[in-house]
Length: 188
Image (cartoon, rainbow, N blue to C red):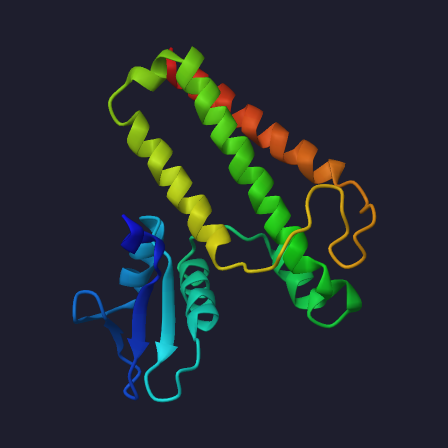
């Protein structure tokens, strides 16, 4: 079990082929995406230089999914991300994204726990697999972000009070309520 905590080491050869050091075979970007969906952390390093290429490859995986029409990131969010690289607010973006995904993950976990308690659908075959898939997705989405978050209501740079992000929290709550309503309708 301790080995699962250690990231899966993928080495990139000069030929740009990716090598799984655990199974001693070559892997594709889709294989790496599968490892991440299963909840596994990965680290991709250049064999010759030792440079960590994980971020570069994770971005490439996201770009490929988006280009195939599996859109998850609205254009306005992508635009804001590009904009954040050029303005001073960019220094706060990693902490904000980290906090947002933590809130989403926590909210989803609580929702799934509550559904399991009160929803007869929780007794249906496959419900646990759905829960595991959602948890793996959230872990994959937040796993590559290494920014430190100083806690709710705290500004990461100054330690002082940060402005409340109530609009985002309200939107997340609304989306969770919508999802719960849809699941309730499926049960009937």
